[in-house]
Image (cartoon, rainbow, N blue to C red; front, side, top):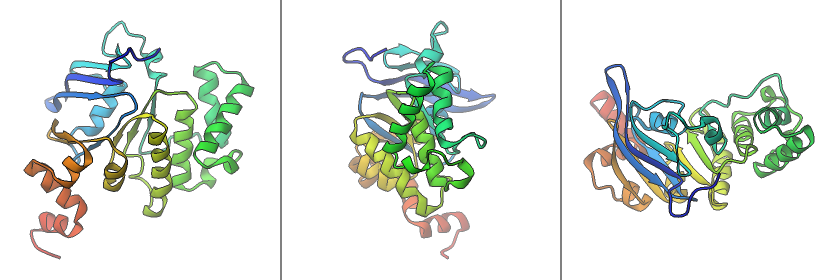
Length: 262
């Protein structure tokens, strides 16, 4: 499947999601064009991760419609497995099989889902390990890798499936600070290659340097949507300014949390 001309790669219309009485998403409208990198930021509980999970139907919306590549994935008759083959997702946790080597972690989903033979799957695995800078770890097992290396393997595994869209759910939040850079470098490479990317993140430097657009969410709604210069450097809304002041100035966060300066 390919995206029809003029259609956004990801389109969300009137999206609501409730868990019981808790309405987490309250009418989200969002479009992401082909090759566009959109970073979604916001405080914990703002709904950003739920939005991301609704884009590939890991969470079923309470109301609204979601389109990927022009196909409505919220249509009850859609072949969701076929649509999901177009979408790669990288989670906060790496979700690698500990009993399989790095190469086996990459070839297993190719063989099971895409029905590739062993030789072709191994070739694709080797190419994507090269892309993320881990060719020398092909025969290693996850336990012998750093957290950053494991996350890069997880990215390579998603890329091996040939996705047209990549979703990242806070991919660096579980990593030690010194390991974050290598993962973000791989994501920069994908952006430069023209991959459509939706990234939930707290990495403001990445958002500022790589994103085409930044979406700030709070309370289950989109508060601001614009370029990094508009949203991060010169936000229009008080809620955005308050969030960024806490995120970018740890001293301000401590004042807010404790009621006094440290």
